[in-house]
Image 1 (tube, helix red, strand yellow):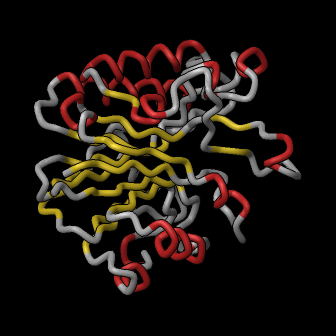
Image 2: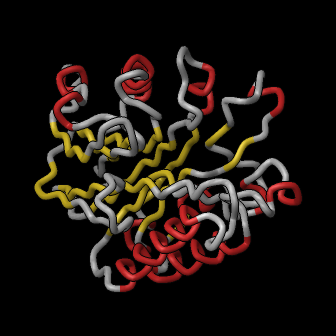
Length: 264
């Protein structure tokens, strides 16, 4: 009888400050693997022992002081990891591992891109587009079953945002970002697992701004977080969910976890 492997991704927006909700999520949902983005800590101050005490013995860390940072913590073994510099400036925005089950998990934190959607006026926006282009070049040569997860900082579909019309000129939903993300997806025939299980035009958000006094009532969300799979791996996905309740937990992240289960 086949078993399942449950993998989660979450932009935690400071793992040390929010270790309480990380522990709660792991206790309640018990994923086999958790991919974190925006950990905002160097590796030596990552809460290694706290997560090991919950059974997450295997950890791949790529931290950075106060900014960025990614990590993969796992109950199941992994045997190699890499840290690709898609930002081309040394920022800690990627970590990847190979699992015993034969596929790779690549965890990425794409730059937000600043506030002005113009490369000339806002260099951060250009860096974001270049980052996606480097990911596209990597995807074109990919020849192994892979799960690509993380905060992509792009909400591509109209039903991925609370108002398509009002956000067309807002960074994360502009046509040029969507075009770059589309090229990335086509470069490896990536399967968008979220939209496989929750097809458009159904509402699907993973981020709500801290600025809203009542995030749930206003529900001005965006789908910035993604889980994409190589076609052969996508066929093994059996369930997918968004953990919206965590947005209301004590000291919440502005993102919520996504969870996909695979038949292995």
